[in-house]
Length: 195
Image (tube, rainbow, N blue to C red; front, side):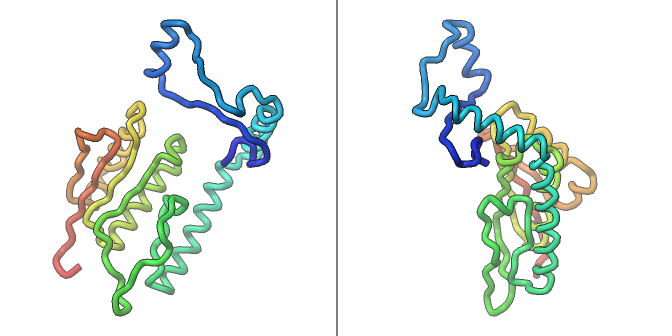
């Protein structure tokens, strides 16, 4: 969501502590700016928008609407098999229709779940992981790539705790924590022949 609701321009820089530490230890000043820096109208607008978001609990409301939407989409998918099962990553650009060949649903070999958009929303993370596992099972996927980002590693630890649950471990063949790319976890599935 734009910080000002899209009505007035504003810019910000977000960075990791490891980038700021040398600056804090040195001059403690950042010589950078944006065209829209120090704009009092935009700053006031952004403050009002975020106050509204917090006051009306829009994040929770959006999560509730998303759950409701996924329920309706699952019902639609049950009546019309070419429609893909919904996932928590629905807004990330997944297509709504699964390709078909002679009317039969085709298997998707690899699925991707990018958790960046919901990295700090615990219940949405668990729902997204659960939905991705359901999606992989329904489509008999061979691989599920979960993008956690490198960050502090907290999100990856949460994903690994989810995958380590006994009832979840029973759903996949193995995982690869990808030591060369710490921001990804790969989940591999093995399906009986003919499925």
